[in-house]
Length: 252
Image (cartoon, rainbow, N blue to C red; front, side, top):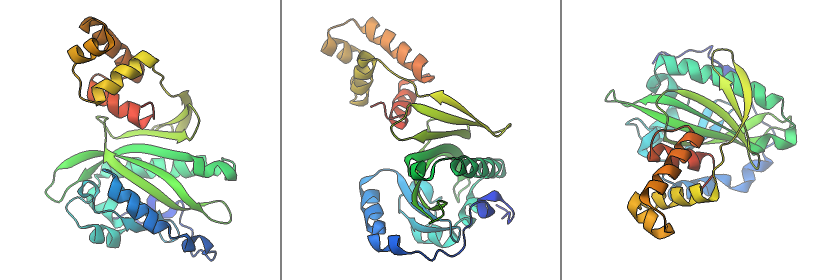
C-alpha cells in the first residue's frame, strides 16, 4: 500500500521526545508479554512519541504472513502495506476523531476509555480478513496526552469495516462514530435478562437447544424464544455473533 505521509495516522498524536521516563522503570513490557502468552488475541503496543510499535506478539492473526519482528520494524508502515486504501481512510478518520474525543475528557479519566473498530488486513497471499482492534491508553504524558497505548486484535464479528465505538470502564454508555459526519453519538450498552444470559452461557459451553431445555426444565421452543430475544437485543442474526457481541460488551 502506498504510504501517505500526511495521514493523521502519522501526524495526529505524534508527541516527539518524552523526557519523563520514570514509568519506563515499571517493567510493564514483561507484564504485556505474559498477558500475550495467555491470550488468544494478538497484542501490540504503540509509542506515539515516534509513531512506532514497541511490542508485537507473535500471534499470526495480526502479522499478515510477516514475523512479529518484521512487523515491529515496519511500525506504521505495516498499515500502509497491509490495509486496503478504503480502510486506511477509515483508520485516518477514526484516529483524528478519537484523539479529539480524548482531548475533551478529564485527564484523570482518560485511561478508563477504550476504542473499538473493524478493518480489513491483507495477507501476503492476497487474502483479506476483517479484524477488530480494541485500543486503550497505557501511559499519558505529563500534559495528559496519550503516550503509549495497548491494542488487542481479534477476528471481527461484523461484516463490514468501521463500527467505531468508545467505551468507558464501569459505564453502560457507548459513543458511536458516524464516519460520514465525524460526529459521536451516545447510546447505551445492550442488556439481557438473567434467563437470557443463562441460555447464552450454556451456548458458550457448547450445549444444544435440546440440552439447554433439559437443563433448565423448559421446552425447546422456549429456548428458541430466548434466542430470538437475545438476537433482537444484541442486533445480531446468529448465536456466534451473539456470543461475540456479549463478550465485547462484557455481558458474560
